[in-house]
Image (cartoon, rainbow, N blue to C red; front, side):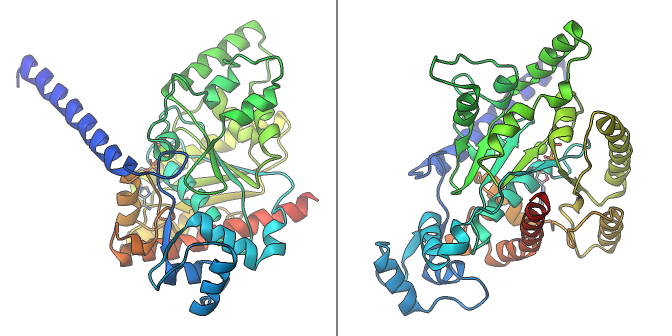
Length: 400
Ligand SMILES: Nc1ncnc2c1ncn2[C@@H]1O[C@H](COP(=O)(O)OP(=O)(O)OP(=O)(O)O)[C@@H](O)[C@H]1O
Ligand SMILES: [Mg+2]
């Protein structure tokens, strides 16, 4: 290929990729009902009867119908479709005491981190966050994702129409790149940047490509004052938001910089997604060595220790003996790891990501993916979500 054809090919490639994105978005956005331009998860009657009770025995059809009538939820015939908002109204009605109780007084902060690219950080963050909001029946978790990665994976997953020119991002807040009116406090601005999603109780503090400027900003601060506490860059934001949530999951980039130092300093837990292949574990090993060195610095800066270091093998093909062996040894390497299983490889994860969702943004009856694939992925990840929920309860007791 000569230079001209190379250039033409690259331009065609870029145009095709852009066209695909536009096509995908137009399918998704047609008739969307949630504030982020996506759809609320739908449940048919049988799924709804199961989703509103703890345990395996669904609510009887008669009881379900009478609860819906009592709560003014439209439910006519056997094949009624309700959405996740109705499911939550019914759960609130059936478990009023436990669902009204705050899960935590202050958010637990989890940094999801691995400097190796593509290990599943963003997928893990989004899956755990959506699962905590949709799968735990008897408690109502308030969950926030902070998108700390200028690649903005979470932002584009949850907000297909995000306009980074008019909307503020985490980078804008850190750099104080906003104008306050006289009645507004910094806390008001921070809260106003958090956006609602199609999953009730799951909010996202978005990122954009422009957030790469934060590094420049922090370097300038350090040039002016070498003692500037860059490790505390996220503290003002987190101290405001931890009042409003039970858990904050920080999705981090695969590069280390001052903001990453701040994320590791503000976190009280970490989740390290790893891919169980030889090459990936080599890089993860380097990351863990690096983390140990960085942690030495964090201790000097006053960090009190992580409560959990959850190593999570991701996209694991459980029919591969090698992958399972590597995954087991990685999980066992952290005695503070309480995840007992892997995040399995699943086509459902990939396909639903294309539709701007996770395996918990859709129900089996929505027919977007084969039932077995989605059910296996949902059942397997439910174990991870239960462990995370347990950690959140346990840490709250310890904090009191
Ligand atoms: N359980 C899974 N099953 C199938 N595919 C998966 C799974 N987890 C992650 N993937 C795929 O692996 C790829 C990388 O995942 P992801 O973007 O979450 O990694 P990352 O660590 O956030 O990457 P980066 O370092 O660039 O931020 C994505 O295409 C994602 O769809
Ligand atoms: Mg990512």
